[in-house]
Length: 271
Ligand SMILES: O=C[C@H](O)COP(=O)(O)O
Image (cartoon, rainbow, N blue to C red; front, top):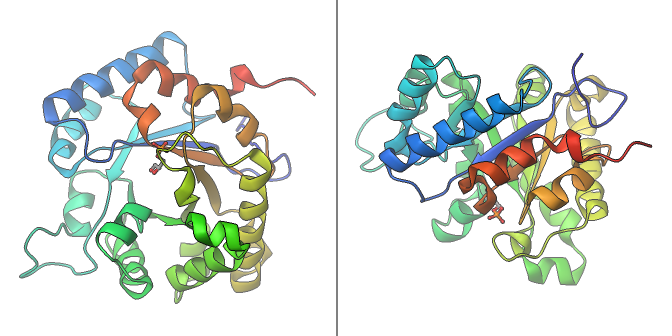
């Protein structure tokens, strides 16, 4: 049986760990090994809750080798990709290269890419399309900063990012897409949006997807929450109907803590 956090649909919960610019390739292998052992000891059923890690680019070959060699069920992906296929783009990484390394997913438009690297909505839309073109599923990140939250325009702001990011996708692509809602004010700050905040935005995102692609598609797209998630708040957020998973930053660097987030079902309070 597939676990679902929403009851009505069959969206498999998805727990993703974004390592950001942490863990060199040796440290990364150790972290992934510890995570896999911890989940194995806990008899984690990957068919019920999907697990993925997003290491730095330099770790991906080692992660691929470990996953293949030890037949791990942990998926992995890149933290960014180029909107271009190949050519004179120094420092950039093609979706084709990620596919070749066995990446199932790629983050697109993380707030740190939007703010530090000034990635525009147009560029991010091109990156989403490039990911699909190369057979990698994009995890499109959206979310508002503190000033926008305080002004009360956070839903409009986030839906505008969403519309720009998904422009021109086919229904099939929109159903496969993952969207991560990350309020910037809650990232790495210890400030967690409450479960009701996560639900408010995820419900708005699903409604927008429904108006763009139809109800059947919107019922399949998985929506994640990210921002200061820890083992002690994960289950409450995941109990919300439209929240299908979590994008975890800092806590994904601690294998025991991240494994506990993955095993959120063991913390759920029965109705
Ligand atoms: O990609 C992950 C998010 O930026 C959340 O990071 P955090 O869990 O360290 O707040």
